[in-house]
Amino acid sequence: MDQLQSLKAFQKVVEKGAFNRAAEALGMPTSTISKAVMDLEKHLKVKLLHRTTRKITITQEGMEYYERTYQLMSELQAIDAEISGKKYAPSGHLRIDCQVSFATLQLIPALKDFQRQYPDITLGLGINDRTADLIDEGIDCVIRLGGQQIPGMVERKLLDLEFVTSASPAFIAQYGMPDSPKLLGKSYPTVAYFRTSSTNSLPLIYEQGSEKVVVDQASYTANNGRGILDMALNGLGIIQHERLFAEPYITQGKLVELFSDWKQRSMPLNIVYPPNRHQSARLQVFIDWMIDTFRA
Image 1: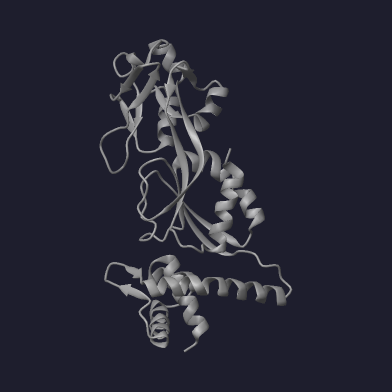
Image 2 (image 1 turned 90 degrees about the horizontal axis):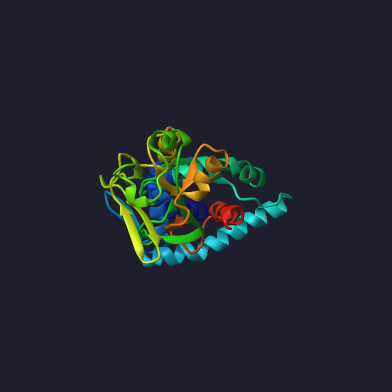
C-alpha cells in the first residue's frame, strides 16, 4: 500500500463528499480511490467512512484522522515547494454557487482581481437563487441572501443588504407617482420574488412609526433578482429590491426611488460552507478575498 497516495485519496473523498467526485478531482478511476481508502482502513484497523448506496459519511475516527493528517499534508506540500525553490500557492478547482444579482453585478466584475492573486485556482460558478445541497452536489461554498440557516453548515456574513423601492420612468409616466405603499397591488402593479421551492411570492414590507404595510399581491413574479430588475426596467411594475443592485440604475435615471420615508427591510448576504475544521487552502483564500473585497 502506498500510504501517502491512500491518504490523499481519503482526504479528497472527505472534502468532496463522494468517491466519484474525489476521483474526478484527482484524475483517477473511482475504483482506484475506493481501493485506496479500503487499504488505508485495513492498515489502520478502523472504519473511516460509512458507505451507503446514496451517500457516504465520515466516522468519528475518520474525522479525527482527517483533521490530524490535514496539517501534516499541508506542511509537506509547503516543504516540497520550498525545497524546489517555488513559493507555495493554493491551487486546484473551486465550485461556487452564487445568488444571481450578486454574481452578475458584483462578483464577476471583481473576479479578475482574484485571478491575478491566485492564478493556479480555477473556479466553477453556479449562478442561481436556489437552495443548494453542498455535500451532494460537490459545492465548496455558496453565496446567498438571508433565508433559514442550512443545518450543519458554517455561515459568515459578508454584509447587510438594505432594500429600496423603485420603478422605471416609463412606468411612472403611465401610472403616475404613488404617494403611499398602501396603493401597491391595487392601483399600481408590483413585481415580487418567489423561491423555486414554493409558488408563494415574498411580500413587500414597509414600516413607518407604528404603521406597517404588507403588500402580498403581485402582478409579476420571478425566481431571481436579475429577472426582477429587468421587469422593473421594462416598466412592468414596482419592485422592492436590494439597494446595492438597484442603486446604479437609480443613479443613471433608469429607475426612480419611491417611498424613501418608509423603513424597508434588510437581509444579510452570507458565505456558507461545510464545517471542516481545516478548510482547503484554495477555499480559505477565496473566503478571505471575498471578505476583503466586499465587506463594508
